[in-house]
Image 1 (tube, helix red, strand yellow):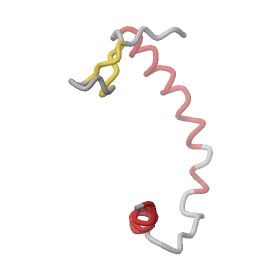
Image 2 (cartoon, rainbow, N blue to C red; image 1 turned 30 degrees about the vertical axis):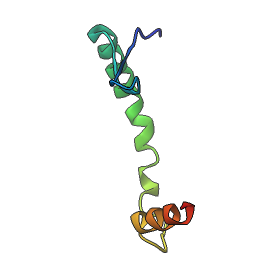
Image 3 (tube, helix red, strand yellow; image 1 turned 135 degrees about the vertical axis):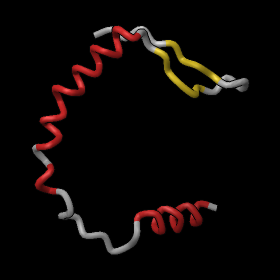
Image 4 (cartoon, rainbow, N blue to C red; image 1 turned 45 degrees about the vertical axis):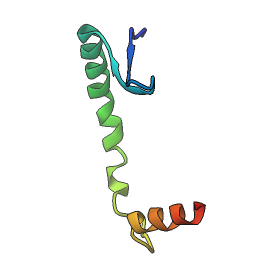
Length: 67
């Protein structure tokens, strides 16, 4: 599937959004809808990962190490 996209940028030419034709968006929506069934096949794994630390606290701690 070819997607005709336009990249929207801010005044510094940094990408901030993508614009696509509505007809192509409808096709993408259908594709996503068909593939959501595959995602639900892993729902039985939800909650099986036990974290020793709050993810947000971990992210902040690791980012502080970068400085």
